[in-house]
Length: 594
Image (cartoon, rainbow, N blue to C red):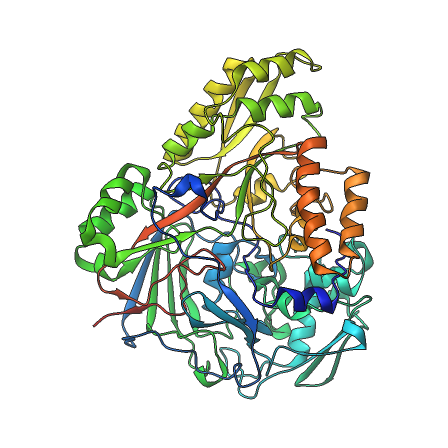
């Protein structure tokens, strides 16, 4: 990812923000996989929420406790069921929406998002007293820690912890998190600039004049640093408890809960952190006393349990499991489910990326786009009520979005096999073999059959490789991953295309998000040029134009379906809603009805 150069003008022009968050949970059909804002294609589906508004809060807004949902009840044990265990618990190694959402239970950042009302949020100080004091034209940011913020052993969170947390992101083992602040403090290839704090060397431009104050001195202006620091990657880790790689299994809490027990891929138990003070926390309600999580359940199993609504399942929800395609019409057509149904369009965009190191001929990539069985995959995933057809890189909620359809996916959603054959005849290999990696779920198995059937009609042999859903991103973000084509989801980390193109077409390294391995000099130059624009409207227009240019000149991906989540929960669950920022059921407002 290139260093971003957004001016204060660009940030202020946004005003009310439509924000999303990094990688989406892998694999459509039954779990959130991509993102969507409904278009005409979904007019027959459920009504969905609009993008949230997000404004910058004051110091008063940054005080706790969090705003309680209507009818809130404190206490009890809440249950969560889902497909996958969490691949990462170390905040510095988290860049997916599900893991970021779960980390709210035990990890805090300098800033975060406070829910004011449904679809209405403010960026506020989390551990910090406010959203930061900026000077030197946006190069210097100062944050002051609140009184009374403590670790689970009762020791105070200090500015030294904050500094350590940023510096440890440079260590070799930490490859999965967001790169923004590290790059802003050093350079684009930040791992070469600094090796982390474990040898005793710190960053000189990360200052701690006292235990309560942390000062970031960036090399260039970054008027949106307070948004970046709200990302889970920048969650605070105590120097005294940092166990490097082992921390990913046993994180130390400064949030409302402590992980009391964890049986990998089976279950997890959380209990209250006695040293968390709700008066310091404007974000997390933390209403249940305990959390019980179970893993290993596919969408159909989860859906049928929620439909039956028996026993402890009445006190159960799922962070990300949508109603299974086989049950979607039943649930949508039965009004008795309406009080327990949550519907939210995804703010992410979903793609099938080509590995450009392996699929080098653009004619082959374009042929696959034309042959793609969009209509069939949409039907398998649940039909227009569960997704809309995407034809671009940007999600419609992102500033700069422009609508276009290069490969006629909307006019010929069943695919254009003859056009694909025509392009293959002009290519370097009229009968190529594609190694296609997919999430090993029942729905993705069926989608894989549809993709394989369509591509083979065009003359493309498909070798399908199933991957573990839990470690999907760990597998496909390896540079030498051995695959030609694979799914990936992305959402703007905050609401401009400046957090899309520079990331998904940024550095090509293990763990980074440029999983197409695009290295086009002209595109990289245009990304840097747009980042330097001071006029927000001009920049947004340029990002939209670049979207189409990339698809025309490189075609690094196949746009996928953008999902609409339709999720059920048990009848004794209160305050449940899908967070429009993370597109996961938020733990901040949920409670158990007594």
